[in-house]
Length: 85
Length: 236
Image (cartoon, rainbow over the protein chains, first blue to last red):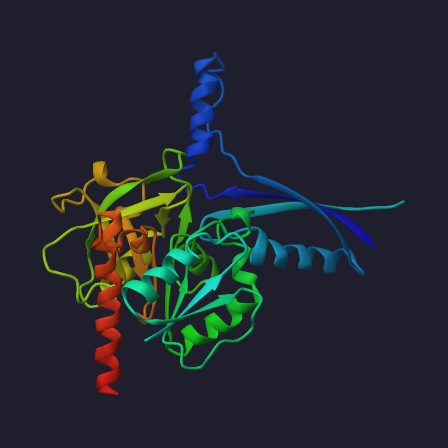
């Protein structure tokens, strides 16, 4: 089976996100005052071969914890969709 | 003493470091390409130099920690070997888990390249023990991701263990928010591990070690390290 993993890596809530803060301020500056709490992270996609959905989840979680995110400063979540040709 | 300077793709302070160690401090130096898997047993100190390993892709230091040489560096450190990371080297050591914490984007979102002042905190570490007393050091920084962060409990533990090596301060040695160039927690500019054999700092001592550059404060840090290691070899 082949899956598409769509991963979001976000700065931890406890941390100041200066990028998000700057974008938030700019949005307010041009009149979007209804916007708040802008946070900026990364979106990463890849395809992965795995015998089952469970194995794919396990592998993607491992890759996210080991490589794609740093637990000291980031958290992650992902969506897994089976690719059928 | 024998130093090993690791060269990653994108390292750019490796030759400055080699120059300072070899020409100014008259030490033996070998350069180690990151694809190598081993180095000489009698290397005393491994240095991870500054630069932009792997173009800072993903996160600074995040890909370099998987370079083949790093397995050996981690083993070396775990066996008590001395490892010193400068700037990007510090980021790699945090990513590898050899040092606590992480380096985040500077609070002002700018790449900062200027001289700053630091004051030693722990007075017993190899990098700080033989520094002149009551004197701040002027050392340049050059980074976009140097905001040191670790959670409160970790910082408290590090304070108890004497793991905070340097703090950003003003020219009179006052540690204040206005003297903090990048938003680092508690003005932290350099730290070490619990065992005191792995060190990391964002400022660049190798860029302030040559008389020709008009500032040699950085040399004092290398000299402290050398004096410390000489003491150790006398004792053993």
